Amino acid sequence: MGTGLGICMAPATAAIVAATPVEKHGVAAAVNDAAREVGAAVGIAIAGSVLAAGYTDRITPALPGLPGPARGPFSDSLAAALQAGEKSGPAREQLATIAKSAFMHGYGHAGVVLSGITVASALILAIGAPGRRDATLDGAENRGDNPLSGTTARPHSHTGHDMPDDHDEPTSGYQQVERMERFDDSP
Image (cartoon, rainbow, N blue to C red; front, side, top):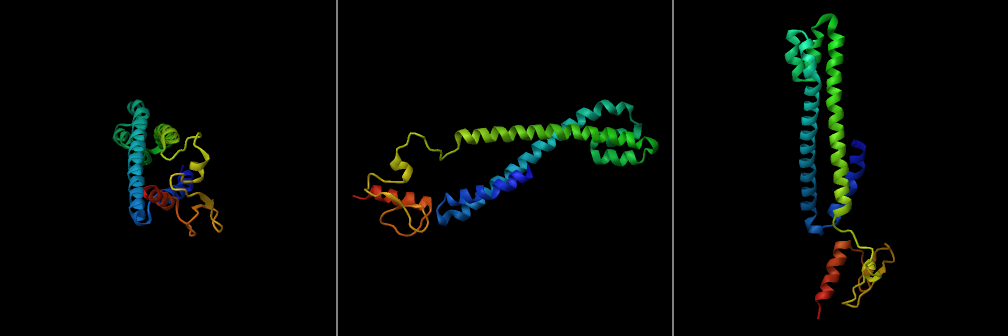
């Protein structure tokens, strides 16, 4: 999961910032960072809640069979259970196994829930993400031609990017669209 996030985070940030005008790059980067931090906090809260519920679900049936002083720590957390198990003498290995098994049960459930959320999010983005082009668009729109202004897009000799004929410097896609919109407004 960490590798996947690491691979996609930089290109996603670059795409978000590139889709905004230069003077708004700081705002775009800040909104991107805030969204990522809120998403991480919500993800951690969901994963922690599911893990805790799974641990409790698995440890509760084992509590009556545990020594009296160990019941409280075992119902709290894995760390408390392992610490209490260290003081239990010869039964410590068995108690540690019970606690670790309960923790892994909750951990597995948390992984399944987060995987489900990831798949659902990917499907929602694949279907409804803005900027997807319809396959039936004519060639002029796909090349960036502007039939209303009489300009056509041509590959720039140095960059290979589509540029209006009357512009020799490379521009971002946003700047090109903005320039073409100005042509639409001209008399």
